[in-house]
Image (cartoon, rainbow, N blue to C red; front, side, top):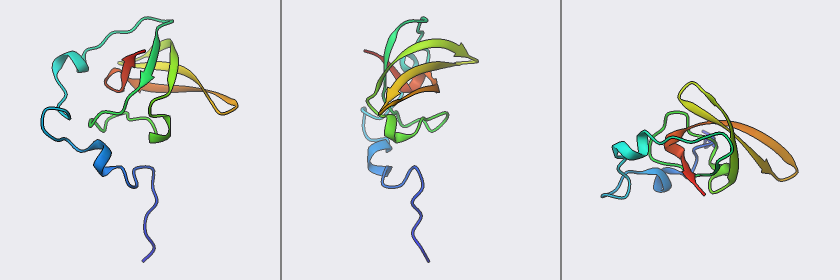
Length: 93
């Protein structure tokens, strides 16, 4: 049988919960951002709404809010992308 090569392929080491480093506390879950804030995409062990791992470490600008998530505009290669990312996976840059 052919091996799966989905978007989470080879990511188990990166996203596993270990010790105190992988735990998500309340401050990380209830972050607030304003429109115009510069943020970095940082993947956490929470699977809900996780952006594709290719965007890990990229910086973008918050352009809006959609439900509990934020719309982040970033430049990837020669394209301008808009990603809908929950606050858990964002950090101020």
